[in-house]
Image (cartoon, rainbow, N blue to C red; front, side, top):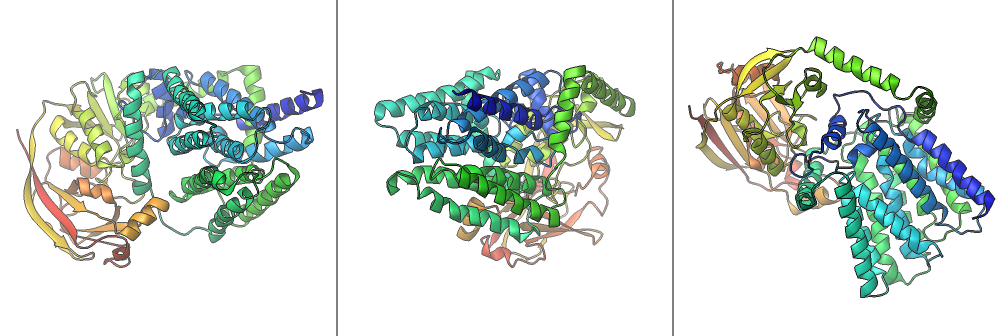
Length: 619
């Protein structure tokens, strides 16, 4: 490699590493992402002991400080950025100016360094770059280094598949594309062996049991399918962002058609490109909050310069297109994107690198000690237990009080997106080897979901395998007890139209199943975008009304009455106190946000089957 080219590549690597790595991570223990770091530090097995949206390497993309993972995180991120810059450098025409290549790489990698969520590192979104590189290698004739960079990208993408579950489909499609373009069966088998070996190798290197990979993949399917259903939000979003993605999605086939391959040869890599664009869109617009939408737009800014090179490996047009899109998005963000980007973050990280080089992790360690010390002073727990599960509260409370952290597999209650994941949590709580105590800050539902729909089975597990002991530091403390049996006694079973009122028969504890069945239109919308909204209105015995989101998880059943909207209601119920009229559900009905059923009728079948049961608990 000529000196000028090598110097340019080294320079861009230094700049990217300084600005994009999390040299200034969050020092916090309340984040879901902090537990992903704990999982690596303690060797928890993914798929059995933990089932989250992140895999065993997820901590690498999460900017949260833990002393046992900080070095791993920085080292792997620096390595991945170096590999990515090498692959990008050799992806384009070698006759291109080195400095133009450096600008092009910066346009691809820099946008995500301004990700608005402080707990997300820029590298969390780097997998899209390698997926697009693999698509580009399939669209244009191989260069001398094409075969090498293609294998590198496939190996790196296997790591990202074990970092964030949304990359698993991209990895599978990338392997299929690689096999499609292979010259013969021998080369196809080599590609499969490379992909499989990379996935298994990264899995074992993360400290995971080789036999646990199938369980992880099965749990990943549950998590991915349940996330789009349970975590989807609908609301007002600036329409220009939808139009921006629409323009890119339409432009991609036109760009790719310029590739020097027969049209039938272009279809599989074109599918991979469109899947990348679709996933970048979905990662922001399923949740529809500022951090997710902002990260999605920044990913798009980084993807456009790379997309513009797929038909040709010449850069001037790609650089001009990338700058134009960045300016367009930046202008839109300035006029209505409050909270969508963190423009100061690259500078903050670069300054933190200088401080880290001078002082090491002294500052981070002292912040962590102060945090745990404050948690111990403000949340002193004397529960006489060795291991604790904690929900809707700061996970650091357990560490600060010298207890072992024994969390349910989905980490948080809202992470039990499906009945199967809820059952996994319940089995964990009911197992004698599970936690000695459960510390609860509240029901755990988010985004307006019915409070006991998230992790529904665990509410029964608390009733039969734990007993309420006391309140400590604003936490309800549940201690393990000899298990009790329970049975569901039928109260009523009816089929109703959306919007119809259903009386709830009197019973101390009422369990409900609501068979939510989408229409073909609803299923198509849920598959391509996200599940349409559906709501449950519960009217209490005192006349008060509560309206909450529900989804297909309601078919698996949930605790309907008493209405446990907060920790106080939970304490009243689990301590054996009589539920007040404000906690007793008298009637329910299902429909859209305005109730009754229209426009939900377009997306969900009628009649809706509703079954109510009394929960009879043995002594």
